[in-house]
Length: 404
Image 1: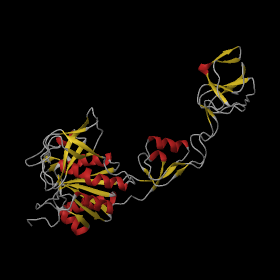
Image 2: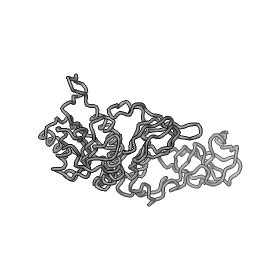
Image 3: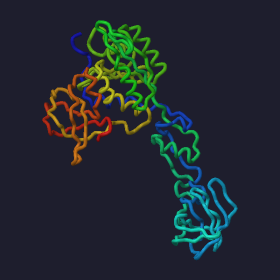
Protein backbone atom coordinates (compact mmCIF):
# COMPACT_ATOMS: atom_id res chain seq x y z
CA UNK A 1 0.00 0.00 0.00
CA UNK A 2 1.56 3.27 -1.19
CA UNK A 3 -0.89 5.61 0.51
CA UNK A 4 -2.24 5.64 4.04
CA UNK A 5 -5.87 4.56 4.36
CA UNK A 6 -6.33 7.10 7.15
CA UNK A 7 -7.46 10.63 6.30
CA UNK A 8 -5.36 13.52 7.57
CA UNK A 9 -7.37 15.40 10.21
CA UNK A 10 -6.66 18.81 11.82
CA UNK A 11 -4.98 19.02 15.22
CA UNK A 12 -8.05 20.54 16.85
CA UNK A 13 -10.29 17.75 15.57
CA UNK A 14 -7.91 15.10 16.88
CA UNK A 15 -7.89 16.71 20.34
CA UNK A 16 -11.70 16.97 20.32
CA UNK A 17 -12.04 13.27 19.45
CA UNK A 18 -9.69 12.22 22.25
CA UNK A 19 -11.40 14.34 24.88
CA UNK A 20 -14.81 13.12 23.73
CA UNK A 21 -13.81 9.47 24.19
CA UNK A 22 -11.79 9.82 27.40
CA UNK A 23 -13.68 10.12 30.69
CA UNK A 24 -12.60 10.52 34.33
CA UNK A 25 -11.80 7.28 36.11
CA UNK A 26 -14.29 5.98 38.71
CA UNK A 27 -13.69 7.74 42.06
CA UNK A 28 -12.16 5.86 44.99
CA UNK A 29 -12.14 6.44 48.74
CA UNK A 30 -8.58 7.06 49.93
CA UNK A 31 -6.95 8.08 53.23
CA UNK A 32 -6.25 11.78 52.95
CA UNK A 33 -2.56 11.05 53.53
CA UNK A 34 -2.52 9.05 50.27
CA UNK A 35 -4.49 11.53 48.16
CA UNK A 36 -1.83 14.15 47.41
CA UNK A 37 -2.29 15.80 43.98
CA UNK A 38 -5.49 13.85 43.32
CA UNK A 39 -8.79 15.59 42.52
CA UNK A 40 -11.75 15.57 44.89
CA UNK A 41 -14.90 13.85 43.67
CA UNK A 42 -17.01 15.26 46.50
CA UNK A 43 -17.60 18.49 48.40
CA UNK A 44 -15.87 18.68 51.79
CA UNK A 45 -17.64 20.52 54.62
CA UNK A 46 -16.35 21.41 58.07
CA UNK A 47 -18.08 19.58 60.93
CA UNK A 48 -16.96 22.14 63.55
CA UNK A 49 -15.72 25.73 63.68
CA UNK A 50 -12.06 26.60 63.51
CA UNK A 51 -10.81 27.69 65.93
CA UNK A 52 -13.27 25.90 68.21
CA UNK A 53 -12.45 28.34 71.03
CA UNK A 54 -11.31 31.99 71.24
CA UNK A 55 -7.52 31.81 70.83
CA UNK A 56 -4.63 34.21 71.28
CA UNK A 57 -2.65 35.21 68.21
CA UNK A 58 0.31 36.46 70.30
CA UNK A 59 2.33 35.78 73.40
CA UNK A 60 1.06 38.25 75.99
CA UNK A 61 -1.61 38.89 78.56
CA UNK A 62 -5.37 38.42 78.59
CA UNK A 63 -7.11 41.50 79.97
CA UNK A 64 -10.33 43.44 80.05
CA UNK A 65 -9.77 46.26 77.55
CA UNK A 66 -11.78 48.87 79.45
CA UNK A 67 -9.63 48.51 82.60
CA UNK A 68 -7.16 51.19 83.51
CA UNK A 69 -4.01 51.10 85.57
CA UNK A 70 -1.91 48.15 86.72
CA UNK A 71 -3.43 44.66 86.79
CA UNK A 72 -2.49 41.81 89.08
CA UNK A 73 -1.36 38.67 87.26
CA UNK A 74 -3.43 35.71 88.44
CA UNK A 75 -1.94 32.80 86.46
CA UNK A 76 -0.86 31.27 83.19
CA UNK A 77 -2.82 29.88 80.23
CA UNK A 78 -0.67 27.73 77.96
CA UNK A 79 -1.68 26.08 74.68
CA UNK A 80 -3.19 22.61 74.79
CA UNK A 81 -5.45 22.76 77.86
CA UNK A 82 -7.96 25.03 79.63
CA UNK A 83 -6.74 26.56 82.89
CA UNK A 84 -9.27 27.35 85.59
CA UNK A 85 -8.70 31.10 85.40
CA UNK A 86 -11.22 33.94 85.26
CA UNK A 87 -10.06 37.46 84.44
CA UNK A 88 -11.94 40.16 86.33
CA UNK A 89 -11.41 43.94 86.44
CA UNK A 90 -7.97 44.73 87.82
CA UNK A 91 -6.52 41.34 86.85
CA UNK A 92 -4.64 39.75 83.92
CA UNK A 93 -3.36 36.31 82.90
CA UNK A 94 -0.31 35.26 80.92
CA UNK A 95 -1.33 33.56 77.64
CA UNK A 96 0.81 31.93 74.93
CA UNK A 97 0.15 32.02 71.19
CA UNK A 98 -2.66 29.66 70.20
CA UNK A 99 -3.87 29.15 73.76
CA UNK A 100 -7.52 29.65 74.84
CA UNK A 101 -8.55 33.09 76.08
CA UNK A 102 -9.40 32.82 79.80
CA UNK A 103 -12.97 33.47 80.87
CA UNK A 104 -13.80 37.14 81.41
CA UNK A 105 -11.03 38.56 79.22
CA UNK A 106 -11.93 40.36 75.98
CA UNK A 107 -8.51 41.40 74.62
CA UNK A 108 -4.85 40.44 74.44
CA UNK A 109 -1.91 42.78 74.82
CA UNK A 110 1.43 41.76 73.32
CA UNK A 111 4.25 41.01 75.75
CA UNK A 112 6.40 43.62 73.95
CA UNK A 113 3.93 46.33 75.02
CA UNK A 114 4.08 45.49 78.73
CA UNK A 115 6.27 45.25 81.82
CA UNK A 116 5.93 43.17 85.00
CA UNK A 117 6.71 44.53 88.45
CA UNK A 118 6.18 42.49 91.62
CA UNK A 119 3.34 40.44 90.09
CA UNK A 120 1.65 43.44 88.49
CA UNK A 121 1.14 44.03 84.75
CA UNK A 122 2.02 47.51 83.50
CA UNK A 123 0.81 48.35 79.98
CA UNK A 124 2.63 50.74 77.65
CA UNK A 125 -0.34 51.06 75.31
CA UNK A 126 -4.09 50.71 75.28
CA UNK A 127 -5.98 48.06 73.30
CA UNK A 128 -9.51 47.58 72.05
CA UNK A 129 -11.84 44.64 72.73
CA UNK A 130 -10.98 41.69 70.48
CA UNK A 131 -7.35 42.74 70.07
CA UNK A 132 -5.13 39.79 69.02
CA UNK A 133 -7.93 37.25 69.53
CA UNK A 134 -9.05 34.71 66.91
CA UNK A 135 -12.76 34.32 67.59
CA UNK A 136 -14.62 31.01 67.29
CA UNK A 137 -15.13 30.11 63.61
CA UNK A 138 -13.21 33.10 62.27
CA UNK A 139 -11.08 30.79 60.08
CA UNK A 140 -13.70 28.14 59.24
CA UNK A 141 -17.36 28.11 60.24
CA UNK A 142 -19.19 24.92 61.16
CA UNK A 143 -20.86 23.57 58.02
CA UNK A 144 -18.74 25.73 55.71
CA UNK A 145 -17.77 24.34 52.29
CA UNK A 146 -14.01 23.96 52.73
CA UNK A 147 -13.04 22.19 49.50
CA UNK A 148 -15.43 21.83 46.55
CA UNK A 149 -15.46 18.82 44.25
CA UNK A 150 -12.90 19.26 41.49
CA UNK A 151 -10.22 20.66 43.81
CA UNK A 152 -6.73 19.26 43.36
CA UNK A 153 -5.27 18.26 46.72
CA UNK A 154 -2.05 20.23 47.01
CA UNK A 155 -0.17 20.86 50.30
CA UNK A 156 -2.59 23.51 51.62
CA UNK A 157 -5.61 21.34 50.81
CA UNK A 158 -4.09 18.30 52.52
CA UNK A 159 -3.44 20.52 55.55
CA UNK A 160 -7.07 21.65 55.58
CA UNK A 161 -8.27 18.05 55.57
CA UNK A 162 -6.05 17.35 58.57
CA UNK A 163 -7.27 20.52 60.30
CA UNK A 164 -10.95 19.57 60.06
CA UNK A 165 -10.28 15.91 60.89
CA UNK A 166 -11.37 14.50 57.53
CA UNK A 167 -9.46 11.19 57.41
CA UNK A 168 -10.85 9.78 54.14
CA UNK A 169 -11.85 11.47 50.91
CA UNK A 170 -13.43 10.43 47.64
CA UNK A 171 -11.00 11.20 44.82
CA UNK A 172 -10.26 10.39 41.20
CA UNK A 173 -7.23 8.07 41.16
CA UNK A 174 -4.09 8.74 39.16
CA UNK A 175 -4.45 6.90 35.82
CA UNK A 176 -2.24 3.82 35.46
CA UNK A 177 -0.64 4.08 32.02
CA UNK A 178 1.36 1.30 30.39
CA UNK A 179 4.25 2.52 28.23
CA UNK A 180 6.04 0.42 25.61
CA UNK A 181 8.44 0.98 22.73
CA UNK A 182 8.31 -1.04 19.53
CA UNK A 183 11.08 -2.00 17.13
CA UNK A 184 13.72 -4.67 16.48
CA UNK A 185 16.36 -1.92 16.35
CA UNK A 186 15.95 -0.97 20.02
CA UNK A 187 18.16 -2.05 22.92
CA UNK A 188 18.02 -1.16 26.61
CA UNK A 189 20.11 1.86 27.70
CA UNK A 190 22.61 -0.29 29.59
CA UNK A 191 23.49 -2.45 26.58
CA UNK A 192 25.98 -1.90 23.80
CA UNK A 193 24.48 -1.22 20.38
CA UNK A 194 25.12 -3.54 17.45
CA UNK A 195 24.90 -2.74 13.73
CA UNK A 196 21.64 -0.92 12.99
CA UNK A 197 20.64 -0.66 16.67
CA UNK A 198 19.89 2.34 18.91
CA UNK A 199 19.18 2.68 22.61
CA UNK A 200 15.54 3.10 23.61
CA UNK A 201 15.07 6.69 24.77
CA UNK A 202 11.36 7.13 24.04
CA UNK A 203 10.07 4.73 26.67
CA UNK A 204 11.91 6.45 29.49
CA UNK A 205 11.03 9.95 28.29
CA UNK A 206 7.35 9.00 28.03
CA UNK A 207 7.32 7.26 31.43
CA UNK A 208 8.62 10.46 32.95
CA UNK A 209 6.08 12.51 30.97
CA UNK A 210 3.25 10.35 32.34
CA UNK A 211 4.56 10.80 35.87
CA UNK A 212 4.90 14.56 35.35
CA UNK A 213 1.25 14.67 34.21
CA UNK A 214 0.15 13.03 37.46
CA UNK A 215 -0.20 9.52 36.07
CA UNK A 216 1.18 6.24 37.40
CA UNK A 217 3.38 4.82 34.61
CA UNK A 218 3.99 1.09 34.12
CA UNK A 219 7.04 0.03 32.12
CA UNK A 220 6.04 -2.61 29.53
CA UNK A 221 9.47 -2.78 27.95
CA UNK A 222 10.50 -3.13 24.31
CA UNK A 223 8.16 -4.95 21.94
CA UNK A 224 9.75 -6.66 18.96
CA UNK A 225 8.28 -6.38 15.46
CA UNK A 226 6.20 -9.52 15.73
CA UNK A 227 2.41 -9.67 15.87
CA UNK A 228 2.31 -12.26 18.64
CA UNK A 229 4.73 -10.32 20.85
CA UNK A 230 2.82 -7.09 20.27
CA UNK A 231 -0.50 -8.78 21.11
CA UNK A 232 0.87 -10.35 24.29
CA UNK A 233 2.30 -7.06 25.55
CA UNK A 234 -0.86 -5.10 24.73
CA UNK A 235 -3.03 -7.68 26.52
CA UNK A 236 -0.78 -7.56 29.57
CA UNK A 237 -0.93 -3.77 29.54
CA UNK A 238 -4.72 -3.76 29.29
CA UNK A 239 -4.96 -6.01 32.34
CA UNK A 240 -2.82 -3.79 34.54
CA UNK A 241 -3.46 -0.28 33.19
CA UNK A 242 -6.16 2.31 32.51
CA UNK A 243 -4.60 3.21 29.16
CA UNK A 244 -1.62 2.47 26.93
CA UNK A 245 1.06 4.42 25.09
CA UNK A 246 3.32 3.01 22.38
CA UNK A 247 6.03 4.70 20.37
CA UNK A 248 7.02 3.49 16.92
CA UNK A 249 5.33 1.10 14.54
CA UNK A 250 2.73 3.56 13.24
CA UNK A 251 4.16 4.58 9.86
CA UNK A 252 3.88 2.83 6.49
CA UNK A 253 6.62 0.20 6.74
CA UNK A 254 6.15 -3.55 6.47
CA UNK A 255 6.84 -3.98 10.19
CA UNK A 256 4.66 -1.11 11.38
CA UNK A 257 2.15 -3.40 13.09
CA UNK A 258 0.42 -1.16 15.64
CA UNK A 259 -2.22 0.47 13.42
CA UNK A 260 -3.38 -2.83 11.85
CA UNK A 261 -3.65 -4.41 15.30
CA UNK A 262 -5.72 -1.52 16.66
CA UNK A 263 -7.98 -1.50 13.59
CA UNK A 264 -8.64 -5.22 13.98
CA UNK A 265 -9.07 -5.42 17.77
CA UNK A 266 -10.38 -2.02 18.80
CA UNK A 267 -12.00 1.16 17.52
CA UNK A 268 -9.44 3.27 15.70
CA UNK A 269 -10.57 6.91 15.60
CA UNK A 270 -7.74 8.46 13.60
CA UNK A 271 -4.40 7.39 12.17
CA UNK A 272 -2.94 10.64 10.83
CA UNK A 273 -2.99 14.24 12.02
CA UNK A 274 -2.04 17.34 10.05
CA UNK A 275 0.84 18.17 12.37
CA UNK A 276 4.62 18.42 12.39
CA UNK A 277 6.15 16.61 14.14
CA UNK A 278 3.86 13.66 14.78
CA UNK A 279 1.86 13.14 11.57
CA UNK A 280 1.27 9.37 12.09
CA UNK A 281 0.00 9.77 15.69
CA UNK A 282 -2.88 7.35 16.22
CA UNK A 283 -5.70 7.15 18.75
CA UNK A 284 -7.90 4.14 19.44
CA UNK A 285 -10.02 2.64 22.20
CA UNK A 286 -9.19 -0.97 23.02
CA UNK A 287 -11.20 -2.95 25.58
CA UNK A 288 -12.74 0.33 26.72
CA UNK A 289 -9.35 1.93 27.39
CA UNK A 290 -7.59 4.73 25.48
CA UNK A 291 -4.62 3.73 23.35
CA UNK A 292 -2.17 6.35 22.12
CA UNK A 293 0.20 5.16 19.39
CA UNK A 294 2.93 7.76 19.00
CA UNK A 295 5.63 8.07 16.33
CA UNK A 296 9.06 6.57 16.89
CA UNK A 297 11.19 9.69 16.51
CA UNK A 298 11.95 11.00 20.04
CA UNK A 299 10.81 14.58 19.47
CA UNK A 300 7.68 13.43 17.62
CA UNK A 301 6.81 11.19 20.55
CA UNK A 302 7.25 13.89 23.20
CA UNK A 303 5.53 16.67 21.26
CA UNK A 304 2.64 14.31 20.45
CA UNK A 305 2.39 13.49 24.14
CA UNK A 306 2.19 17.18 25.05
CA UNK A 307 -0.45 18.01 22.45
CA UNK A 308 -2.65 14.89 22.47
CA UNK A 309 -1.93 12.64 25.46
CA UNK A 310 -1.31 14.91 28.42
CA UNK A 311 -4.77 16.58 28.31
CA UNK A 312 -6.40 13.14 28.19
CA UNK A 313 -4.48 11.87 31.22
CA UNK A 314 -5.43 14.97 33.20
CA UNK A 315 -9.09 14.47 32.29
CA UNK A 316 -8.88 10.82 33.38
CA UNK A 317 -7.57 12.07 36.73
CA UNK A 318 -10.60 14.34 37.18
CA UNK A 319 -8.79 17.56 36.32
CA UNK A 320 -10.59 20.37 34.49
CA UNK A 321 -7.47 22.51 33.86
CA UNK A 322 -6.22 20.04 31.28
CA UNK A 323 -4.52 22.26 28.71
CA UNK A 324 -1.14 23.94 28.86
CA UNK A 325 -1.36 27.76 29.01
CA UNK A 326 -1.21 29.48 25.62
CA UNK A 327 0.42 32.90 25.32
CA UNK A 328 1.40 35.28 22.55
CA UNK A 329 5.17 35.47 22.06
CA UNK A 330 7.47 37.42 19.78
CA UNK A 331 9.94 35.53 17.58
CA UNK A 332 13.59 36.38 18.15
CA UNK A 333 14.46 34.81 14.79
CA UNK A 334 12.99 33.86 11.43
CA UNK A 335 10.94 30.65 11.61
CA UNK A 336 10.92 28.44 8.52
CA UNK A 337 7.54 26.77 8.05
CA UNK A 338 5.75 24.91 5.29
CA UNK A 339 2.11 25.91 5.09
CA UNK A 340 0.66 22.42 4.59
CA UNK A 341 0.79 21.42 8.29
CA UNK A 342 0.44 22.90 11.78
CA UNK A 343 3.93 22.83 13.25
CA UNK A 344 5.09 22.84 16.86
CA UNK A 345 8.64 24.18 17.12
CA UNK A 346 10.66 23.99 20.31
CA UNK A 347 11.70 27.33 21.83
CA UNK A 348 13.09 28.94 24.94
CA UNK A 349 10.78 31.73 26.12
CA UNK A 350 12.04 34.61 28.28
CA UNK A 351 10.53 37.82 29.60
CA UNK A 352 11.88 41.11 28.27
CA UNK A 353 12.10 44.33 30.31
CA UNK A 354 8.84 45.60 28.78
CA UNK A 355 7.02 42.39 29.75
CA UNK A 356 7.10 40.94 26.24
CA UNK A 357 7.63 37.18 26.00
CA UNK A 358 10.42 36.46 23.52
CA UNK A 359 10.82 33.03 21.89
CA UNK A 360 14.21 31.78 20.71
CA UNK A 361 14.75 28.55 18.84
CA UNK A 362 16.44 25.61 20.56
CA UNK A 363 18.30 24.84 17.35
CA UNK A 364 17.76 22.33 14.57
CA UNK A 365 14.14 21.17 14.71
CA UNK A 366 14.63 17.65 13.32
CA UNK A 367 12.24 15.10 14.83
CA UNK A 368 15.16 12.87 15.81
CA UNK A 369 17.06 15.62 17.67
CA UNK A 370 16.01 15.16 21.29
CA UNK A 371 18.41 17.96 22.28
CA UNK A 372 15.86 20.38 20.83
CA UNK A 373 13.52 19.49 23.72
CA UNK A 374 16.15 19.72 26.46
CA UNK A 375 16.02 23.47 27.09
CA UNK A 376 12.56 24.11 25.65
CA UNK A 377 9.98 25.70 27.94
CA UNK A 378 7.56 26.31 25.11
CA UNK A 379 6.23 25.15 21.75
CA UNK A 380 5.41 27.85 19.21
CA UNK A 381 2.38 26.99 17.08
CA UNK A 382 2.88 27.77 13.40
CA UNK A 383 -0.55 27.26 11.87
CA UNK A 384 -1.58 25.38 8.77
CA UNK A 385 -2.08 27.65 5.77
CA UNK A 386 0.69 30.14 6.48
CA UNK A 387 4.34 30.00 5.42
CA UNK A 388 7.52 31.34 7.00
CA UNK A 389 7.40 33.78 9.93
CA UNK A 390 9.89 36.65 10.18
CA UNK A 391 11.75 37.69 13.32
CA UNK A 392 9.53 40.03 15.34
CA UNK A 393 6.33 38.25 14.34
CA UNK A 394 3.86 37.46 17.09
CA UNK A 395 2.76 33.82 17.35
CA UNK A 396 0.97 31.61 19.84
CA UNK A 397 2.95 29.32 22.15
CA UNK A 398 2.19 26.46 24.51
CA UNK A 399 3.95 27.13 27.81
CA UNK A 400 5.59 23.91 29.01
CA UNK A 401 7.57 25.23 31.97
CA UNK A 402 8.29 28.35 33.97
CA UNK A 403 9.23 31.48 32.02
CA UNK A 404 11.88 33.79 33.43
